[in-house]
Length: 410
Image (cartoon, rainbow, N blue to C red; front, side):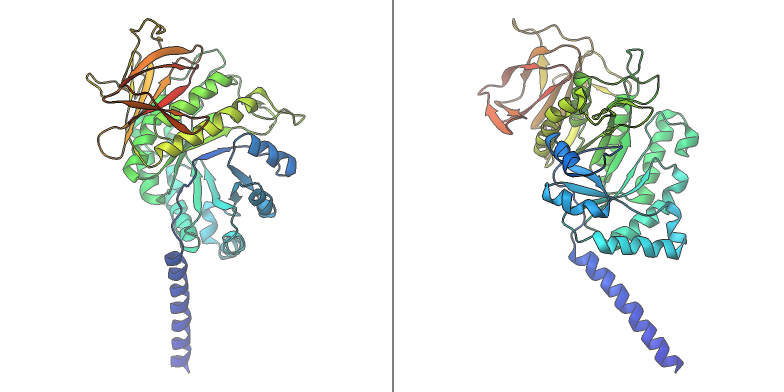
């Protein structure tokens, strides 16, 4: 009798293992697909709010199970709130709830990702890693999403030691090693209420960019679209353009805004308390499609370098001499070179750059300059999604405040 029971149990366990392997083997691992434009502090999903999200150029919405059909009808991808905590794995009853939820939604065509956790310290990484592995075993086609602290978090928050750069690099290293994410996400809020800017924005971008490149995964930048504290200002449309284009130049494939909907203690965002749209919503409606269009062009390429002219912020790199792409302000029609300088993000399929995203780091004024390259150039129109031939290795462009232009060698 014991032998029969043992054999039966062995067969059941073997069948379960084979079933899990079959699920993982037959379903392709999550890929980012269309670059992401999303938000934090989500609005309640209904026909009206979904229409606003679509018109605003957002393509990933936060959703409960009951709104998946609504998201699908409107061509939106959905991030599901998962009923769990990092300690869920230690509670069989909670794991049963999680597994049942995954089974209910994983085949729905609107499902894109599962929300896991926001800003964990390093002490939570082992538990998060086990949870992500559990989810990936059951549903490898959908992202397990966790967002990380910014570089200005304290050592106590990060759970690592050392100076700012050392502690943050270790934080990213441990997260990637122990959690094995498919996407790296972080938030960083740059604009202060006294009119000044933070000092670590490009440092954070550079550290995230390098960690994502080393892990061969995409990354998301969560940027501010509100004031949530007296020390933080509401960015205007030009500043939001600056956030979008600097993220693109460093290789971001995903952008999120904090916040979207009205929340007590917050001002700005995309919705007023009465539900009407703010000026930032109008800006996002213009900028989000541009982000997706440019990021789509850059997705097959690798970020090869990000270079600054004139002003080189903390963590940034100066444009080297004899660079293959550069900007020239010596022309008769050129503007004065802005004191904030210019940013050039290099991209290519090999070590040789074929594309450059040139960004005006002055978010108060437009600039006119010449972009020079190693051969005849083409310019990308982020509104029409089309490339236009310049038939020369030098082309004059006017960049709006905080805006940019993607250029490639023909």
